Image 1 (cartoon, rainbow, N blue to C red):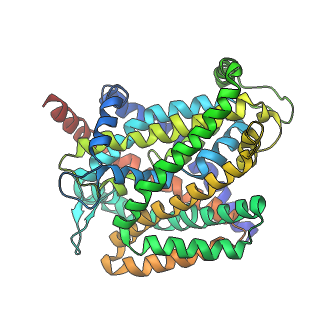
Image 2: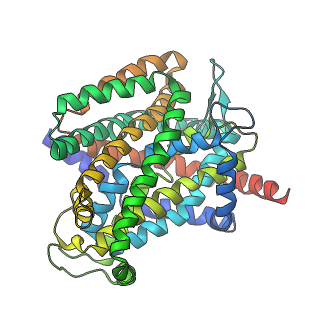
Length: 443
């Protein structure tokens, strides 16, 4: 087992190395320039389309609003709470700046993914709309690229069981046991029952739950963070100055912080930013493909909001709370660091973070079940959907009770391997995105 772990670790170091980070950022930058910075300039328009998209107008399974909430249910989770804590612990406060940069170009990536997902989606044997990277590779590129779509579906199916299932259920179990002394078996049983009640109903039921749970928890978490920042309002300017300075100079060791060079800050900011918002991984467009819309660009401007809300709002709140409270030098990391930051100011700060992490992780289980299901359906047909759902629920129960360090490593590696086919497809199909966008806004 140690040998396998070592091999996977080496592969992980390659697939999440400089080449991958440059590919993800480069693709986002290329799309941003090709779109003439439209995702940033049309941000307000995107929110108007989101508000209008509470009710769908066109073909599809779920409303544009619920499509975004389904996608965000998979992204707002451990990356926003634990991931930011890890990024600052390893890379220093400057890592937060590079997370912002990743999000700004990532908005263009998410936009392109959603546009292509709707433009090239199909209707399956049950009359349901399906789409995502495997479909826009299949329908948008020549047959010689068909293997690329199959590779994405295989990586996505396996990655889902790890990063979207076992890692999440285990995080919930560990958090609840540490904070409220709830046994792992109890957590596993409750999680499996709740997940089963939602997942067996399919994407329409998942979207309904996500449409109510995600906005409520995101607003609650952001509100708690803003309260902490209000009590430290005088430290915010110096915290922002520290973030900007550290982003370009690195940061020396101080307190429990071991110190970090500029490259480490960049690497952590980009990697954790991508882990948080999933821009470029190709997961979110699977949800957006089911949106009730007649125009792919309308869903695209809604889809790009996921990256903005996830990273530029939720992750920023987490990062600023950690920096202004000064706990980033404590030597703690991950969710413990975030809990420490909230508890520094709020009486029940640890409990707020624990409940937030548990609910966010639960919604991630729901969102990723959609992604895994559609990948399996692409590979084996609609008959494989129900067996997949049952297996998914069983794995939720099992994963909550295991030590899953290896699973996290393996799933993280597969996540990067999902990104490669998707990013290549985005670059090859970028002329389609640019043309659809130009035609839409010229109208």
